[in-house]
Length: 230
Length: 406
Image (cartoon, rainbow over all chains, first blue to last red; front, top):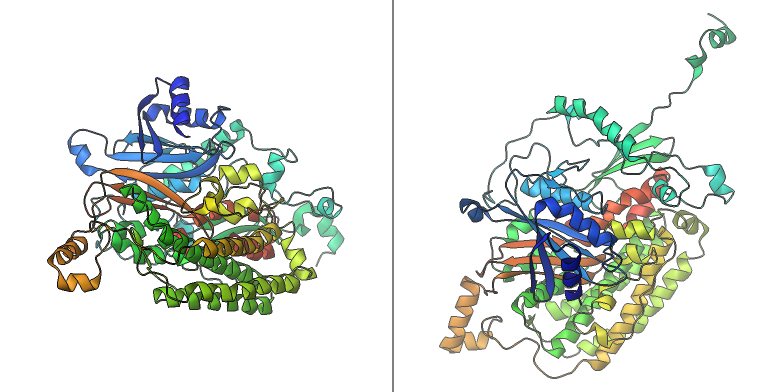
């Protein structure tokens, strides 16, 4: 069933597809990193593909490949279509230290998955607005799922820290299309406002979403502070 | 002292109440939340204006640990992912490796796995619903529902030898065939479970407090849920009828007649009701599986490269001794390649992405925990609601620390 997806993908972005494979019924395409987001957008927006359901993003470390001059990491994501019931896995080879463009702009679900890959493999996602460690703590040295990280390594003791200068605090400020909003209780009690979460209010047009320029502005305003922290 | 009206004339802002949001830490160890998780809240009065959900407190390096043993040694670890329904994880991982090996277990085993898995699912949903009710102050339904868990665990203990962490599935079969009275045991508790579901509903569904705290609280929209990768009862409560058992049938789920219950609003109430109804559907599946399951026949595939030979033969024949030695010391060796296999666990799509380099050790083993993405969406459910609404919302998301943080 998903073989149709491969065909369709090849006809839509034939130049971007470097390789396709189908192993045990899992369809996979390999694309160049520069086409990463473009492929994702086609997967989501093409009416025949309609991959609107986020599944997963992960990475695989191949340190030996680096010695042969090949990129070290595989980064892969899978998505599926709720209506068409087909799925696909997209893979790209990533060099150590190379940035992967973020997919959070295409599927919101990529947020935590990318944070986890950053945490575990040290792969940075360009454009991700909240790239903090998620499973490990900030003082953790190294990236545990890399093959060159020994499983029995002892981590340095972390000194007692004040709440002021720890990155574990939330970076409240920039929003992913969800403005801070209070619930309008009067409206809701009167039955006129049936929506609860502000995010839903944005989707249904009851509230205004942040525009791209506003987000960019907030990001710009945030930058000097971030660089000072580093 | 100046009179108050003079202060007001001088400075308009003197009597203003500070309008900054209050920051509150909830967790990582909070008595009203099950699971170690930290939430940093920005509050305006009692309204949650923003929340940052911080998982990771139960991280113990599951994926890293799996990358140094044999494939079969992963089973005890997967038990500890979702420790409320370990049998589903067991079977999910066994199916993933079997997909990599391209083998299929005998029919009898498939039914056996379905029945045990559905029992575990019943357990999972009862625990979640019971705990949700308890967190809202209803302690009786909690105990009432948990007694079912005990009945189910009695059966699972009889079959596998352990009440919780079974490690019962094997690559290519099960550790043991069904016990003699297995079908009768399961048939005996079915009407009892059905009765308890009805009783729990009559205890809760007309309770004003319960209704007020569940209805319209913690809403999530359909489109948002899909984009965030939400699966399982949380996704179905938003009206998306996605169930792996129905959409991509594995084992023998295509031979059963069952419905996929969906909600309409995606609020706590819908999540509660979807779970309740799924218990009934699981019972339906078990009934049909019990009728269809053959009483005779092998439970595991007959391949010495995959399954351990019987102990009796290991002690008496050289072939079996060698096969046993090879499997224990080197492990079974799947062909090179990568597969993603997914099953419907208690909380949604539980996926295993396995990479094999042809050796006896997994090169990479990635779990796609359903909780991880459900919890990611919890932020949007919580925002805009009152601080007290976090408890039922978080309860109905059913975050399981072991699975979420791995």
